[in-house]
Amino acid sequence: MSTIEKAIAKIGHQGAGASGTRGTPTGTPVSTTQAADPGRVLHHLALDRLRAQGLLTPDAKRSQLAEEYRLIKRPLLMNVDKRGADVVNNANLMMVTSALPGEGKTFSAINLAMSIAMERDRTVLLVDGDVAKPTAAKRLGIEAELGLTDLLDGSCDSVADVLVHTDIPNIRILPAGRRHERATELLASERMSMVMAELSTRYSDRLVIFDSPPLLLASESAVLAEMMGQIVMVVAAEQTGQHAVNEGLARLGEDKVVGLLLNKYRPGLGNRFGTGYRYGDGYGYGYGYAPTADEPVTQPGA
Image 1 (cartoon, rainbow, N blue to C red):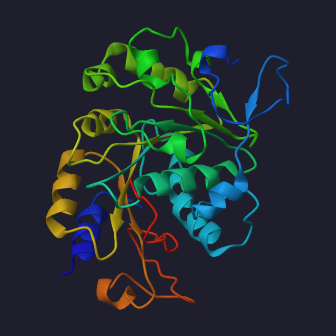
Image 2: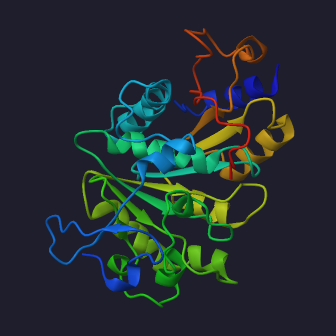
């Protein structure tokens, strides 16, 4: 069996199927749109900039990338609605991770958040949980100084102090915050448990997506995994080794609902993985994973 086949086989057994000024980003363009809250400034997400990075945008209605993420998000949403293959506690808390850097976890986390935000009855909070090497917020053009770590160490009093509202109505961003030498302990703290409870229960239509550190390089990822209802593990085609896949899955624990997402898929590689039928130009999927569109080779993946 190939690397991906073995990883999928293992997953198959699990059924994988009001903002304050302190949270306002600096050094980035913002819209002065007041929306429903006259005191709220919305951060402008430059869609042209996102498209240039190969990222999904709300106006990409029938693109190949949009279609692929529709496939990826559907079983996750079904689990949230208690209609999926698994009975999942805290199913609206999701973590996107990978075994090693460069495999596309941040690319995938942002695209998944964008795709879910296109749903008519869902809102998304994207959390930059890679506190040692934060990337997600920066790729969206957000240069906020404060974020999750500041909330956890008491530098900020509430989620509202660090939450970034965007001009895409259904998306909010929680940046990683300032670096902290005890980030793992902060994530494992009682304060974190309280924050997670607030994030997951305050709004019934909200899904919380964490961009996690790589599983094999940072202890924070295992701590985050314990709190998640669903985990998406990104596997890079022709890059992620079998040992890395197996060790990464082992660190998630046997009781977790995990889905594999095959990233950086290239036309002509489908038969080597033996993962199902192919439809159209470079398009493939099978039970246990759904591939993303081709991520540019030069695109940073972590």
